[in-house]
Length: 265
Image (cartoon, rainbow, N blue to C red; front, side):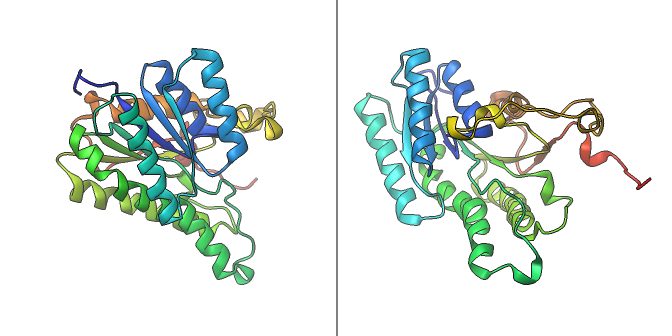
């Protein structure tokens, strides 16, 4: 990574949950961070918290729906203008495609509407495509990286989660295809989180203190439910030089949950 610029990350769905943890972590490490989210209230909270904690202008809030082509184009234009305004050279070091409808349950298969099916696909998969396409020139300039946040639900399922599972499964295929098309300048990898507790990182109106039962902890081989910091560590690794020989891969971060064989009592 060049030392002539401050590294820049764009995190979609960055105003709440895992995305919010990522934005905070990279800002704390001295990066410039653009947080793209469709939730105006949550976005305002994040930028206000950043200003209060670090007294920095290194965070840009971008309100946009990742599934809307015109909105994504406007967001990237605003990002370029912000960089130029602060005297930063062109380019992007990291894109994290994290945005997407968080609720995995789409209801009974036979009553799932085409419109709802498309909402899940647009928020996770189409959004990743649009943001990746827009980010390619900047990532090529700095030989940056893309990390797509998929899910273990791409690999195993509960009932009535077809739309979410299909979107996340598509994101895994998109990851390895993009890695081949965009290399060697851009590395593309995915992370599939398992159960990650994000209650404390929601916008204030929806924030909650987590309470996990012993059985919730015990169903993980490591003995606990996941934390956003677990995903932050994985993204940090895949974005860094130590992962320079890794591309097109899916890193499962789930405390061993998908490896646990469970039989009904």
